[in-house]
Image (cartoon, rainbow, N blue to C red; front, side, top):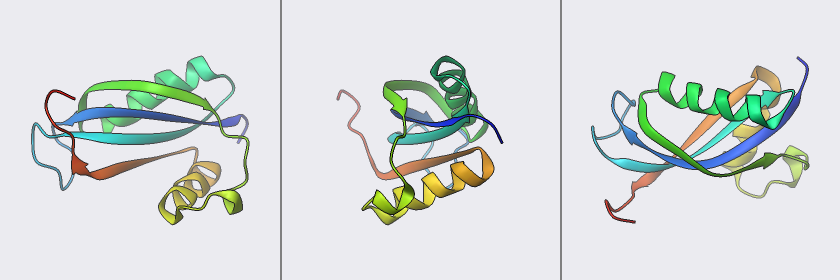
Length: 101
C-alpha cells in the first residue's frame, strides 16, 4: 500500500455509531494512509461517516512521523499499526463532550 500515514484529531456526533448514545458528541482520532494530506482529510471524513458519525469536524491533522513503538498510549499505538497494515483506523474516546464546548 502506497502513501504516508496521516492522523486527524476531531469530534463528531453519534448517529449510527456502535455503542454510543445517539446524539452524543465524542472526540475522535482518525488515521489514514494516503499520498497527500488533502486526500487523507477527505478520507477521514468518509471513514467517520461510514462508522456512523455526523457533523464531524477536524481540528488538527498531519503526517505521522514516528514509529508505533514510540507511541506511549497502547490504544493509539494499536490504531497506528492498524492504519499501517490496513490503510485506516479510528479511535473514539469514551467520554461524551459537553454540548457547548
